[in-house]
Image (cartoon, rainbow, N blue to C red; front, side):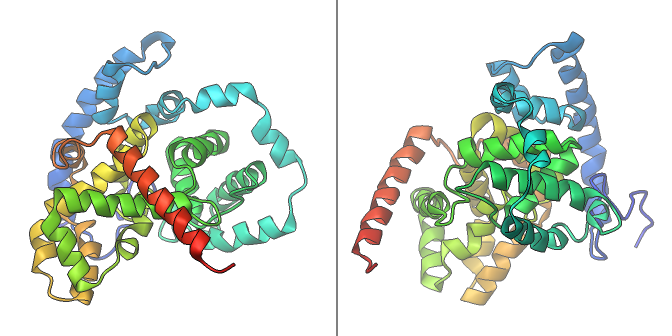
Length: 337
């Protein structure tokens, strides 16, 4: 293999494995670095002289084209309106950390710390990110007693820390994700998550009926394919820069973005999915489609999520959520207690 000028560790601290395709990455970065330079200039003008970010059509357009990494902490706080929630209790995070912790919560959170990004140099035992991650997760568990701690939150909080380099900012962004953008994903019953997987299945049925039927015929449940996609918000699923570009839009536009990403992955890889002949090959196919070149080329991929799925309104998603939530409640009432 030709010698690459790229490090074996990426800018966020993730180790590149032996099978990492440096050639494809080099090709991608040669184009993407120009895009980043151009976007950085435009954001510098937008944010010049300490201007605050407002939710406007211009900002929405800029967000879709990517927020420069140095501006992500402040822009995510503004566009998600986490900063407004923080204003109501500015000392909350520190107050929680200064209070005593429940042993049960401490034990649960500590169990997941070593499992979080084991291939990231900042999350090794010697580095201090595990301590920062513990603080964010334990503070959130004490702040939201309904959720407490749920597996999957460690990946989200971990990536928030890598992106914002701030425990407190990560805490507030985690709070807005769990309570405002993705309600009932991380509760004990995970009702919101289960309903949204049903919603996705119905959207695939409407937009790619042949794929939907093929997946049913081969007997692979959508929950097996997509639970990690939804729970981790594509962290530990898609390439890191693609995930962060998705999160840019998620903080501005809400959970509809997750459906757009899922539908794009499925429709873009229709031929590969349809070529699968059995359950095992289909499961392997869904693992492969999140690692191929189109998922790596984050700028083109993010442009495609607003084109490939076609129209997708919030009202459509809301109606489907209401329908499946009602079905779920009715099913639960029938089950013996």
